[in-house]
Length: 253
Image 1: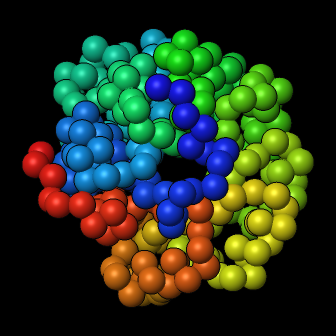
Image 2 (image 1 turned 120 degrees about the vertical axis):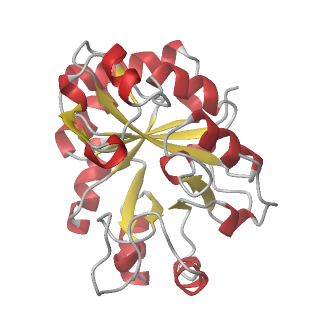
Image 3 (image 1 turned 135 degrees about the horizontal axis):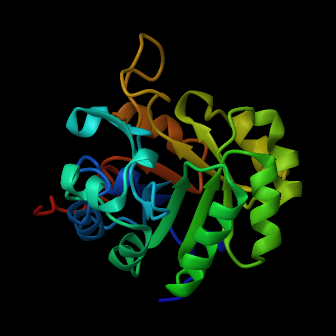
């Protein structure tokens, strides 16, 4: 289904983006989570992309499997068959694109090789998903490379330095990510003045929160924190539980 979700203003409030597929609803980055997020009324699915040893793009957040299945090996050191024996719920990028349809999909690309980025963009096009896909990149050079490869795909800048907003836009980014702690009116305004939309990632940029605002790890937020984010009128919010925005009934997983 071809939609320009990422290139038009949201019809109502911010887009509800299910972080790691909807990690509060089912196992992260799994088909079960995708289905639960869709049932919960999410506008889009966020998932992570790494590459196996045999060159298959897969949806795994961490560089290794220690947290997910107590195996210290890196995803990039395992072929797909071995990875699936350790993590049966793992999806390839192609499977994730199919499972997310017709929702929007945000690909948090954890790769830095331009050839790998090119292959991902080609895979998205092959699945007729370009117009519903937003790719997240962490370097200005990668943003520039991706934009030269495709005029149609939407790009989100996953940059830690908000001062890079102008450079990100000049390279071709359409969106800019702010962490919850930095989602302030001045920074949000700066992103918009640069010509991009604002996506807010809830929680802290770590799996275990430290004693600072906000008091939750990545993906988690309470109602008070959510209201503070909504006050800056972001275009999208990434969170583990999209029901906090959609208020949909609890999904069966």
